[in-house]
Amino acid sequence: MDQTLATGESAINEKHRGKLLELIVRRSPYSIKVLSKKLGISRTTLYNKFQAAQLDYDFLLQVSKIVHYDCKAKLPQCHTQVVVPVSQYNKRDIIIDKKYIQLLEGYQRLFGFLVKTAHKYGLEYTRKELDRTFEHI
Image (cartoon, rainbow, N blue to C red; front, top):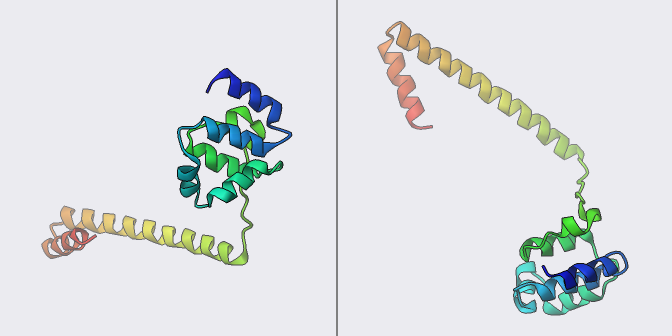
């Protein structure tokens, strides 16, 4: 990025994020048509974003990823995280996931014990059945 863009950024970044977006986009190797297609929006919508003074930081981050521009370095306030509230359904899923992982770990220990025991004591039939079971996993 050249010095002109860096100077333009500092003057614009807090007052008009849409203009900053326009500077970044115009200096990128992508055409407006290609960039709008990659963003999944129309060219008109992208031009409207250029006019938005209070443009969403997440949109700036999305564009910066596409055009390979480090928006976070120039705009420290761009370090945003989308916080998704954990609903009751999500809490239940988290609990089920933890229990499922515990169950799998238990089965893994059990199979490990069975394999060691079958090999140690020469339980040929058990060893073959365990080997056959592991082949399908």
